[in-house]
Image (cartoon, rainbow, N blue to C red; front, side, top):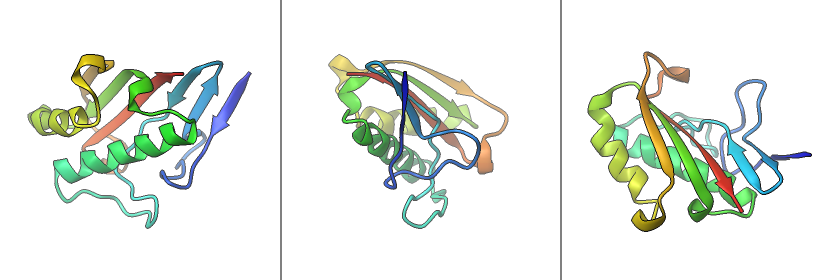
Length: 126
């Protein structure tokens, strides 16, 4: 059985999907982009603030499922420019303990929703 996870502390979905789905002890999040959930505005000032907003959105979804970044076992990062990898990695890494960080892949793509520069999804287990 699946349980839909929602929170007003992360952006509402902009299509036919949910913020996250919990099945058993495993949480699958939808990709998060840098939308401020309070205002609905995109945060695209620079790649550091954009990635920070993405990570805060993921944190809110995890919290809604009674989890933290320590529960994350797999991350997927989509970026529009591999030249931004270092900055994205620095921000992303600040949310994890290096010793228990999840598995991950990072892929450069041609275009992301709303023309953002980074989108991240995670899988977490209780």
